[in-house]
Length: 130
Image (cartoon, rainbow, N blue to C red; front, side, top):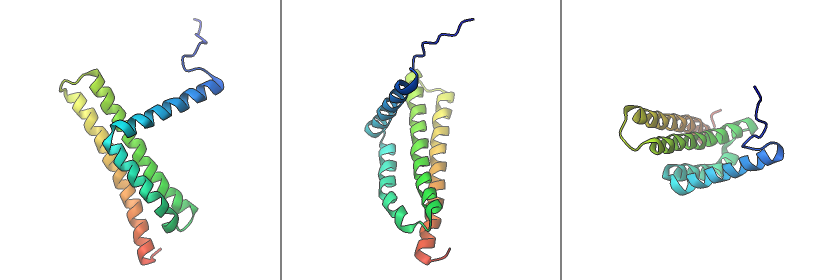
C-alpha cells in the first residue's frame, strides 16, 4: 500500500504558517461569536497586570498566568464542541445535550481552579501569610 505524500496541511514552514492562520481565525471567531470567551478574556487581561504585583516569585507568577490560560483553552474547546454539535444537528438529542453539558462542566472546573489559585494568592498578598 502506498502512502500519499501530498499532505493537505502542507509541510515544513508552510505548515507552521497555516497553523498560525488557523489559530488566528479560531481566536477571531471566539472573540466575535462567543460572549463567554470575551468575558473570560477580559478577566484574564485585567488580572494579568495584577499577577506581576502579587506573585512572590517566577513560579508563582507562572501559576497565576497558566490558570488564566487554562480557562481560555477550556472555553475554546467547549465552544468548538457546541459549534460542532449544532452543525451536526440542531434537533434535541440526549447525546448532544450531554456533550454540551460536559463542556460546560469542564469550563466551570477550570474557573474553580483559577479561583482557588488566585484566591489563595490574593489572600497571601493581603495578609502577608506565606
